[in-house]
Image (cartoon, rainbow, N blue to C red; front, side, top):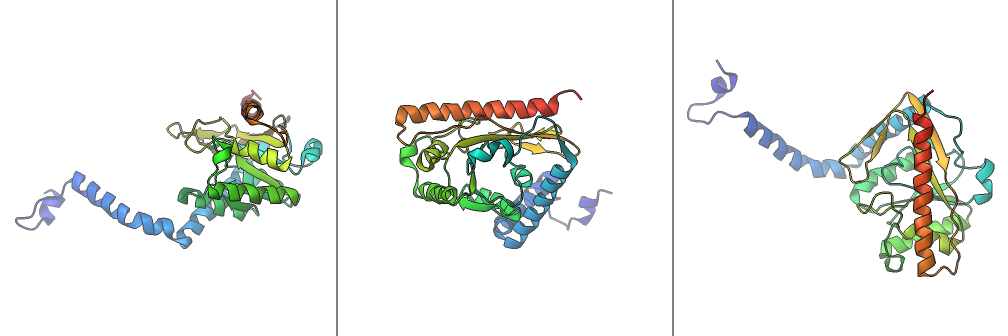
Length: 263
């Protein structure tokens, strides 16, 4: 005899798979927000993510031709503004050298809070704001404060990191926020890319987020530095924005070329 039918009291409708599915979704909706707001749950998630990222770093040999994120040939450009693409930045905390201060801009959205907690696990300071604007003259209050904080960090000799493209905008197309920071600070933009040979691309995500996997090869590439004059006008700012886009895209392509080359 069907178990559902056997358990159903007389006169009560027999539950169906669809009904159970609706009940499950309703239950998840009720608990999702409290879970998302729970510091305890966030710390568990962040701890697991941090361990996974460390595993990826430890099990992916850095291939020949890679660069260092600090020191060496790039020491003359420090402190600098490390530029990254959305969806391609997840390994940065694990690959950034220990002992070298780094301040990273992280979005103020609730979804980005895990990202902020994550980088803090690696000793990286988070500044909340959104700097990847399409119009540098109209930064919101939070974005303006964040850029000021990043400028102060650069003056103090710390490297800073920013996501160059605009959230949910055109992926891999730099906004003017990072160019504005370079103009205000006088420090160069260092387009950086990290890639692994084993990876999963989330094709349905707007930025094609890449989940890097362990037990493969990795590469780090720093593209051609971009300097922005203190007196840059709107036309020059746009040229520099395109220059950042081209340099960061070239660095990304080279990073993938290195890890995907036959061995």
